[in-house]
Image 1 (tube, rainbow, N blue to C red):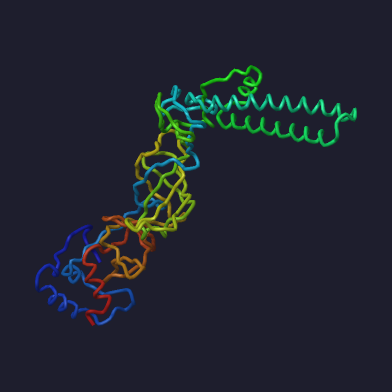
Image 2 (image 1 turned 90 degrees about the vertical axis):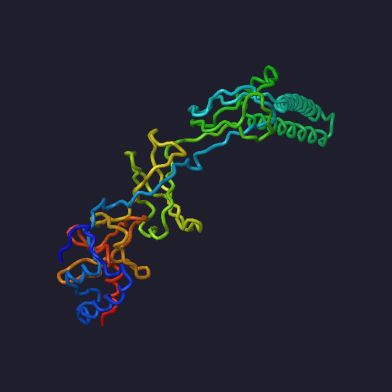
Length: 377
């Protein structure tokens, strides 16, 4: 059967008498097809029914149609640096977009609470020293039988308690951001400082600053948000009808970006508002991708050696969950099952036993389905 590529043929289904003419035309065809999914149809009959055909277009055999994606920061690569104590911002030492090294100062704070922590630590050290001296004296007295054993045991308990308080106060200063060196210097010099510097916990980029100089804040208030920007996530909302073709581990290519990524998540839930499924890919970032960016991506779906074809949306035949296309053959058409891989409002991508030499019906589909259902018998 020969049809011109993408030629639109006149259809009898465009006027008020189309149903009568269609029924008359159907009555003239052979009473039954020779195969279950084949139908006999002459060129004239096909033209009268408005059948038009086109060749399927071979596309990348491993990628879907492009989907819109959102580039986001993986949650495990995002940190919020919070205020260890209540106080006021004295100075900001970084700006949004800066790259901070591990241990680099980010914010300088002024805090009465920090002053109190240092004072408490020095007091605990003094108390530990007194308890230690008292214990030493009581040991000497106990050996000389000048004090009973219970006095010695009480001194030992007081010394242990004093050491625990020192360890506790030291840990509080650690949590406030003081280094071991700074704490040792405080113990030696007893020089209490009113300012505290908050440092970056690790090498990362500054993505947000939530305070400004002179601003007062409570303990645990967010100061700076840091993130490691490689790899990044590309999140895709895939129509639920297409999700069966996508698997974890599939390749993902972002248009305009040379490095492919990998699908790490195919969500088990569907967004009820959009009827889409979240697909998340992990993409190595060499600096070309930016959080918040939108792009287009193609997702891998087929094994090596399997073909994929793009056809107009109108050429797809749906019967329940089964999808097929009408392929022209000598003296008629054959209904060929295909696997639906991707679709949008204009085109679909399918895989199956077709080639770019086949002619696929993309018009008059309703008439062909009617004949196949036996309307002419």
